[in-house]
Image (cartoon, rainbow, N blue to C red; front, side, top):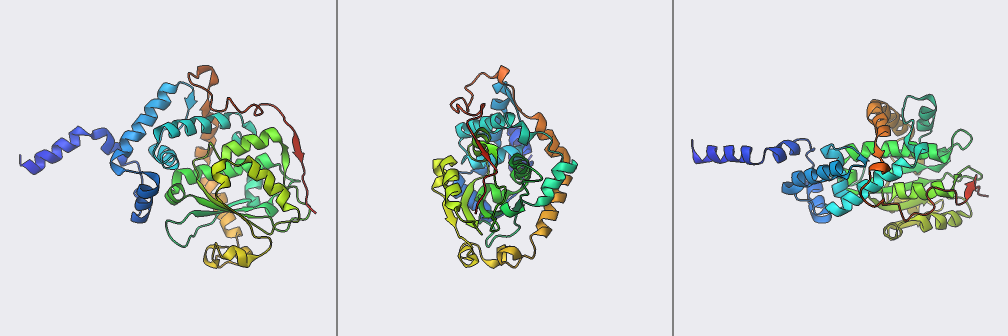
Length: 334
């Protein structure tokens, strides 16, 4: 046997687990590899070992019923810049907060008539383009599409998490470069923008920040109603310190201001862009959620069993999560 062949044979048998597991991770473009390395501390030769350590920890935790697919867990590694301790904390928070939000995490069947009606509203719409392939992905949140007479905010958040679960699994650009959110409020004059109590609001805040592996890169508000600053201050108060330091801009009704950050080539027609009507993306995501129906329904069985927990509950200090600390009911704008 030649030295070259002998070396190749030794390599195959010395690290079979890592080589096998690495085949379950999608290859990514060089620009994303570079960003992951420079900004997220990602080292290709240690990913397999890191994933096995996370899986072992999940099994030994006793209380977490969670996914162990490599691509799913890699999203958490990237979100936490490959700090295993931060991954453990975020995964525990991710499944713990979902366990106390049944109104969001139950009945996630995209073919259910009511759920499908909420999906068709098109409140949460990922946009398909960015200027550069390693720019943050753009998520459009259409507040004016939310019909408060048809559903409540938890129903909107349900669909938001369904979309987020698919992005977490499938979108490498999102997981490496993060996301920028555009909130189009559509000049709502008296829309039902909020219909939930403060306890739910706090849970939703944790779900979308401390628990979420989707990294926020900015918040932009367009077509805002009068007195919007009052609501913006409420949400800033619920943001983590890190997110408060992100770009947070209210553009009023100025598309020109919005286009300084998002050129027309990456926006739908409704925002003065070149992508065509936003409805096409609403329809595409409706079908995409239907195509992933089994995956989304399976999420309902995942969470935590507190009776088997051997560690500290990451939400133990959140005193108001399990009560009702007050209520926002149909907060309206003039």
